[in-house]
Length: 345
Image 1 (tube, one colour):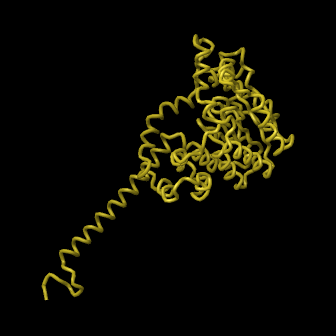
Image 2 (cartoon, rainbow, N blue to C red):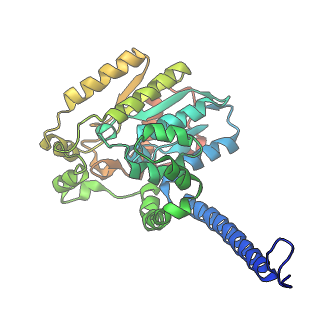
Image 3 (cartoon, rainbow, N blue to C red):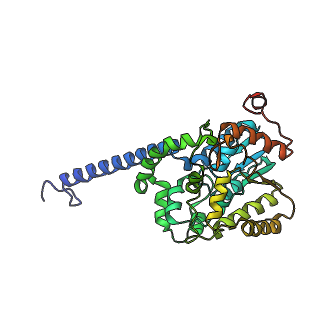
């Protein structure tokens, strides 16, 4: 018998080679896990897609016995509401936010034992445009959904997405989405800027008409229907969920400039039938048990409260936040610091 062979016919050298291979493979697996965890941590720091998850963590740590306001929306809501002015309230507004995300956040919130008084939902035109829930959007935002939605539900939203790919992207995002971290880092400055107080006075702009057109260039009537089916479906699901859980609904049209409105009209976009269709759907779902706050034109003659054609600056945010509080006849109270702040006029 060959001295280099054991009873199973395997040489000592082969056993050592296999053992080394196992050690190398295990080391690579451990390294992948560590890199993946680091990737997730950095992505949460730099990518605004994870804002909802971070806000939910803040809710869990806060030990709220009651949530007085939950704000949903896009950049209009971000710049329209200063959440520090509302006690025991949460801000889930995100730049480029979609109703499909908002629905699953609210669904998760209603599964807790905490009473929710009211949900405040952005009700602006661009929120309903037919942004398709494409595979690229799902993949990009998937990990940010992990607190609120399981992979099977994501598959229902995006039938064209491959299930294995969804699982890999969810649990090992560093493999398939390395560019997300790079993109997040590149966008970090813009995100921080978007959420930072802006003192810009747009009334001083000398290119207001041009600014208004640029702000609305996302809408192309050649490519999109004014009201997207997915957007409307999940908006109504939010209303139904609020109704089932006895949560008051507040719909808000946030302030814009006349130049922004003019740009919309110049794109042959008629707001009247657009909102008529939406209001019919709202009334069929809630009856008259909701509040609609139409602020779109309230600062037409106060452009110094805007930082661009359709976003409030810091001064405008403080003023509108107090107006939202007053107009909802809230039984909650503004924080004393906010009341005392001299920015509120």
